[in-house]
Structure formats: C-alpha cells, structure tokens
Length: 234
Ligand code: E4P
Image (tube, rainbow, N blue to C red; front, top):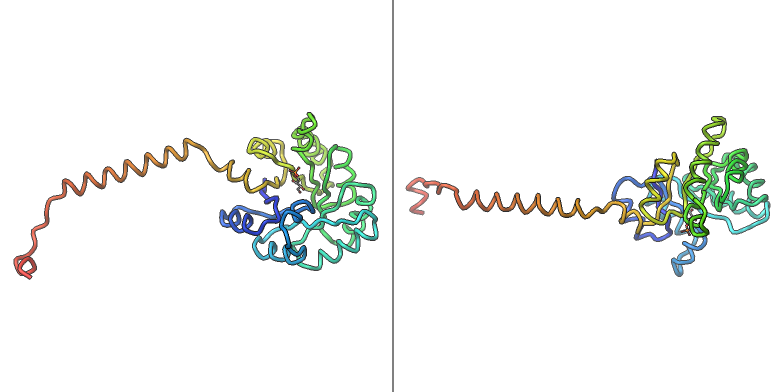
C-alpha cells in the first residue's frame, strides 16, 4: 500500500517527504482554506516540486462543463496533478469524459460500494472512500474499503485504485493495508503517531546508554601508551 499525505501545508509536506516513503499528496478545499493567503495554483505547483507522485487538486464546480474546464486547467499545471471530482452524477459524467482524454482523476466523497462501482466504470484513476466520516456516524468505514477492494478484484478490467481517505488514527492505516487498499492518504499527525512506539524509544535509549557505559569502562581500563623518549621530552 502506498502512502499519500493528506494536507496542503508545505512545511508538513517537506517534513514527511524527508522520510523518503511518501508517494503522493491529496488536498481538498477545506485543507487549502486552512493555508491562509496561499494561492491555489502556486501551492499545487510547489507540492508537485516537493513530491514526485500524484498530487490531488479538487474542482469546486458542480456542473459538468465547469468541472471539465477546471480539470483541464489543473491537469495542464503539472503532469502529476490528479483532478479530484466529487461523487455526484455530474462528477461521474465528467470523469467519463476526462478518462477518455487521459486526465487522471480521484473521485472523492465516496460513502458506499455502488458509488465506487460507478466510479470505476467511469474510468477514474482513484476512488476515495472516507473511512473516518463513516465511523463518525457509527458505520464501519473499513468494511467499505474491504467491499470495494473485493468488488474491484472480482472484475479485473476495473483499473481504479482504492485510496483510503479520512484516516483518523494509526489503526485505520493498518486496517486499510490489511483490507487491500492501494493507497491511504494520511494526515501528518497520524503518520507521526504511527511511526512512534514507546518500546522503540526506550530500547534505543538503553542501547545508547549501554554503549556509552562500555566506552567509559574501556577508557578507564586503557593501558597508558609509552611514548618514545624523544616525543615525551618535546
Ligand atoms: C482526502 O482526500 C479527503 O479529503 C480527506 O481524507 C478527508 O478527511 P477528513 O474526513 O478527516 O476531513
């Protein structure tokens, strides 16, 4: 499973990109709105410079012509731009056209398996089922990932990748991988939580202090080297 970062914050992207495992970035209008004063196009282009992988930029139109116009413009900004389209009838219609034009799409706000089937039939590159938001309403978000992964496996001609979104904690990340998601898009805070374990930190501290102790013992028991007479006199 690949990992994308779910943010429009350039500092977070720089920090996580330095791990060397980041395969892409997803943004949405809410995430971009949090970056006060940032220009949409300049932000997406900068993200494309920082990360060599798919970068999702979402349309704000809800009519087909508007979505197509935005999608074509965003796709021209950088070859790695993936156009995010909402999962509404007009969105599916726009994705069908964009797929024929070779423009990559990420269909967002997916909350059931039928929506994911329509998305794949339209030829989208990714479908984004929102795990956390389903959990928020007492549904099983991860069951949706499992269902979609199974449906897509049943019909190998469907090439859409399952992009687990709305990931809220490290267990979501593990479960998305177990469920067979192709990608999980994850906030930086969750990735930082996921990489940490108290036993890793305690274990490392012990290894380093044991090594330091050994070095100190070695230098305390070291036999003094006798210098040649000429050097000792100098
Ligand atoms: C990503 O593409 C989605 O927009 C994002 O994961 C939504 O996450 P949220 O439900 O935490 O806002």
